[in-house]
Image (tube, rainbow, N blue to C red):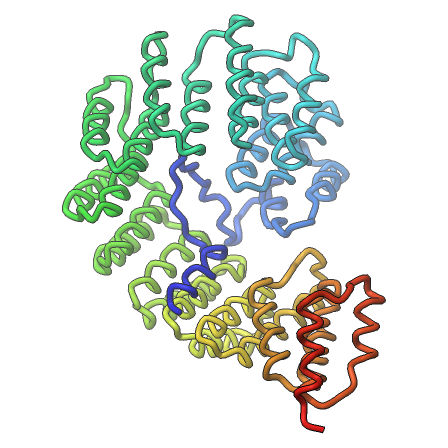
Length: 506
């Protein structure tokens, strides 16, 4: 059952490892008050899905404040790093439409990437095809290649790469890195080293990312000897400045192989390269937590606070997740209290980390108690907060409690008007099955009535009502007809349920 629970939480885990390059997130998204109001400080908090930054841009101009291309480009870069691609695209398009910046091939490349992420590959291809010939440079071709790689389109990627060669674009480290990333994504690890060889033969020196991709290819094949030799080669290159990312990646593969002493050695080397990189501290904290070293986790957290001065919600999420993994529940709740008084934006992903940790440990009651205490402090959870607790109870087989938590999630969804939110289908199915098999008619009707306000009526919802009513000794002909009116015909399961009427006492 614990394994089932872990599987359930894979989709909502907040801390994950990546085998591609880790992008450094700017610390400027810290939300404490600042002495000077900037355009970015106005735009940065607007991170809710569906919100637009255009009103703030227009208001800024209407108030007579200056705005330049360089500042807008910096904001676009910052938003891309935070994966706020829709907002970045809005600003990029606004900048072009207002004539603030005449797009060079570099700006077109950024625009193409954002269009692909927001509107899809077809829209990006259309944008590329409509560019003037002078804008179809190595940068825009490279941006489109990156789009193909991101979508794991092997044939299109290789064909596009070949076309770049035929046009005469000189081979670059970036394009080779894209191809190596593609092979990693497709789990064709042996081909990564072929690209590295071709790269060197064409006089292109691998960069840090090139080596990290190749290290990944060795690590994913559990070829630690090959990984170590490549690391030694990387360390010997005069043009390479070793960074924390590489050593932390090596450490993660040693941890995966259970070679903890070598992992610790790699982590120490990684720490030496950290400087004031908050993301690096977070990554090392997670890795030390994965080997159960609580002392190192706490030591690094203290160092991060001293080095970075300001700490954002992502830092707290990482540390809370690590403490929960280590069963350090008391420390986690104290840290959560510290975060609540930090002045940071109240992002429910932070307390959700503790909720997930409790539920993964089978402590759903503690998760529910914590969530209720947050409510008493005047905070309104997001629907997924109650879904986390519902998943925890479902993993323990306590379906009635699962249903009560899911009802709260559904009610919150309606309360905040989040039309895009959908409940966890696995948990919903479990609740409906339980209602049909064990629930009373009143409970089944109440739950389905609430659920149908969030998702359309489906066969499982109708079956739960029919089955509960049959068990309750009630007529179901009208319910069956309602199901048919909804365009859902009887199937074998429906007939099986209806046959239960003959088994009910007269």
